Image (cartoon, rainbow, N blue to C red; front, top):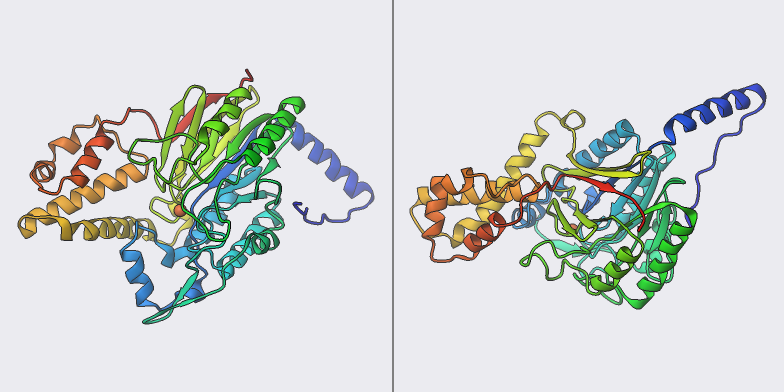
Length: 413
Ligand SMILES: [Fe+2]
């Protein structure tokens, strides 16, 4: 069970005055419940990579994670949270780089500092967190195996910000007396972690009980998962959309759940289907370092706003360096597969990196002619290997609409 942090002992008039002030504050503040959400931190404890060129090489082959600056990111996130003052922080999995026990322990301590400031933290694991096959550390020219975590160790490390129940780490986060979040752990890590997510009959039994309890209490309830509950597009479906999503959807439909918070895609992307929005949050470890603020207002309306980590909380020039890192990683990965002159290859790779940055950060608009009018797009159309061109065409055909902002009615059916 979630352990509450001990309170201060106060006496006499001081206690009375504080109680009155708190009551007045609660009356004024009860109108709104505010969550902050982050996903896919992929944090690696610094002693597991510091000074390792091999680690930087691994990141350069990756998807733009800037994990070598994990400390700067977590420090900025803490300042952002303390400035925003939400009622709770929700973390939808992929806490660690690859499930290292040391990274989990450091993160759990970091979450405790947020809780000590009076902000609840609620966590579910992702596909990289438990029974990972590859928890490793990096030295100068080699990597080495390190201790990972089992479900039991995960439960011990995060005892203050998660709960283990009949369906893994699925539990109700009772954020306020008006808003609950059904934290639904669909990651599959029996024996060894798998990429896919699975909503089982046990999940269904647990979730129906949770949603029924929320209905009986007259509380607005949303869900949170690591994997997606709606297929965001045909080409980002496999391993992203959880198996058994239709069974979870049946319950969210039955109980009028308007919003599922998730991650896993590493793309800031909102899918909508018949009364439900599935808001996949961009990976925090990748520029522009997204987090979301979800607000339940006094009239029952829910808003979702995806934001970039504020530059004021980051070291000077960090945002530019992080953006450049993403663009360099993305373009360098593509160049070997491109044909043309050096100049043409540079143009195409730069274009594709900018395209992907806009798409992954949730700011891409397919109807904007700037993408098809760019001279590099004409070069892409002549490429013999068309897979990336086909991907870009599919992205351009996606329905328009904001992937950063949502306004939803939380009315019950
Ligand atoms: Fe991830």
